[in-house]
Image (cartoon, rainbow over all chains, first blue to last red; front, side, top):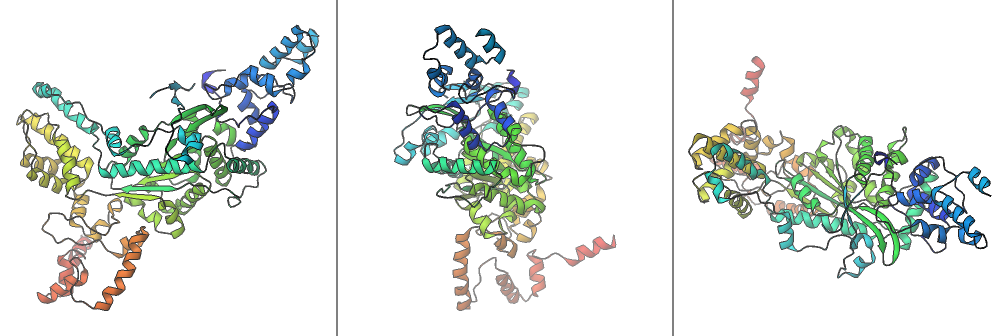
Length: 117
Length: 497
């Protein structure tokens, strides 16, 4: 991300216990009264075209970068506590678990998922 | 400041540090706790004070350099009682405004979510607030040009951190960038849209966010923007919106913009208005607006009277002399300088700077009364008619210049030969906004009538007429002499030419 086009979230609503990431974003949108969905995507991920799913959101690192500076929220915390990741990977081999974690953090294409399978 | 950090766009911000206040209601609210602790009078004065560099040995520097040293005097900021009032006004506005806006408060969250929903569904209605009372207010600060209104506000605001970054509060994640104050200038063409756009742009400039792009689409109307402004203001925890130079707002857009301010306050944004007396007419139109806009506090800062305040300021300026001979302060100087500047602080500083420079240039190296008079005559040539008008205290003359109108009834006693005339003219009465004075007057005036007393106040027109009868003059002559009306001949002469 170039520094000139820096996007930042002014405020993030209080994160509740065991809340899905999707829900946090939904509440953020309502709080800001943001009409445009594209603007919302750009605001959170810095890009319009991102693949997101309510259970396995991707590009969490971009989201964390967009938070106000010195924020204590980490990628790990969000993936482990606010997505379906721990349930899904509970009985998966370690390599696959790590791959899914990585894709959720940095993002990845469907192609990548299939070819690795 | 401690914990200074920089935002990615280069702005300085501080990390929130929560102080404990003795007031219980303050300690529930992270936005208030992040503010610096309230200061007492001594601290305020110490924080506001700015002293120029001044050393004894400077006097022996070459005169060419000393000419520039004198310019240091412009930096001087001497806190006066009025400035402490303004400080308190600003601080109480900010704190009171945050009171109802606790990000962890159930009702506030409900309110924010409801308005957010309404914006998304395009069903925003300003009057649909349930269960939530804003504590937003408005302060007004009016004063003559050159009294240092803007400087004062800037000095005060620079002592309040502008951007505070929160990350954790009482063991919970709390991610917020708090913008404590924002200063805008009233648009010169009184266009409401310009003001709204300026709001978004200024926020983006400071925080490095892109609210402007996020919210404002090309064809957005002002009515659409208002709820967005209030929502953005809530989300960034805006404590105070300062609007400077409100006298720019001209008649055409005045109604609209004043209504806009009122609805901003209704939606929970604190507003502070700063302007010259040219803005009086903005407040005269409706009680509703005037009540809201001056409700919390209004401070009117006109030129100083010839009293302790003026002398105190002059004495502190007087200490800075770069001429070789140090002339001690005395009352004679005070009188002369008052006559030339009428207690307008900017002019006082300028007069002394110019006088010292002239003294250094001519090699006299000493401040004298003649020198000060001469400099005043030379340098304030264009301002002379205005200064004369203030000096005369004559409402007819003062009304010509809209930014020197006064609102208070008591006139400063000015040592001039002319009789002091109270500025109680109809015009001034109409624009007066202080309810208290108005009420008092209403009580008083029937009493006066009932008495049928023949002793009129000095400055009352009837008093003049009475005097005229004694001296066997016609009312026309009397009015002409005291300059309430102008000589007809003057106008005839102009026409013939």
